[in-house]
Structure formats: structure tokens, C-alpha cells
Image 1 (cartoon, one colour):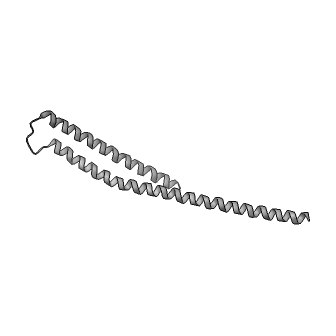
Image 2 (cartoon, one colour; image 1 turned 180 degrees about the vertical axis):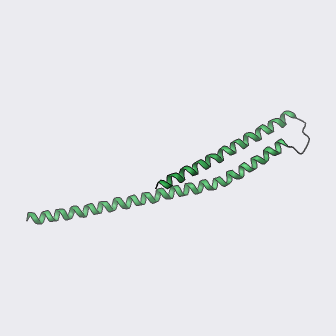
Image 3 (cartoon, one colour; image 1 turned 30 degrees about the horizontal axis):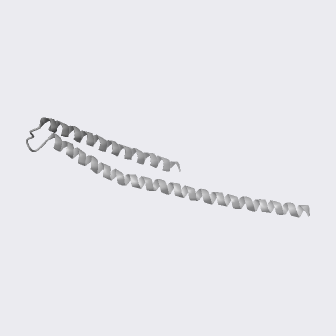
Length: 115
């Protein structure tokens, strides 16, 4: 009778191990799918922001040119110089934002490649 009990215990242990393994594997697969999906969404969102940031840089470049090369005679020298300085500062900020987005995309794509 001990042989039957022993065989039954081995059977139960094997079934439990398989069930636990399946649960763990299924959970790991769900976590992996969720992580990959989150990264894909993040990358797609950043790529959308990238296009907007590129347009913003172009707009700020044009604003700087407009500040530097006015089409009308200006009467206030200080205002002219300040407008150039502001336009350059705005362009610098837009370029920094663009660079941040590009670096974020590169980072998240690198993380995704590790999977």
C-alpha cells in the first residue's frame, strides 16, 4: 500500500508542478505582452511628438529670420535686438525639446530590442 501512496504522491507532485509552471509561464507571457505593448505605445506617442517638434523648430527658425531681417524700418534698436535674442532663445528651447524626444525614442527602442 505504501507503493501505491508513493506513486500517487509523485503523480500529484508532477501535476502540481505542471500547473504551477503553466500559471507562471502564462503570467510571464502576459507581462511580456503588456511590457512590449507599453513600449510600442510610448514609442508611437514619441514619434507623433517628434513630428510636432520638428515643425516647431522650423517655425522658430523662421521666426528668428523674421526677427533678424525685418521687412519694415524699425525705430527701437533695443526692441530689435531683444526680439532677435528672444527668437534665438525660443529656437534653442525647441531644438532642446526635439533632441530630448529623439533621445527618448532611441532609449525606448533600445529597451524594446533587449526583449
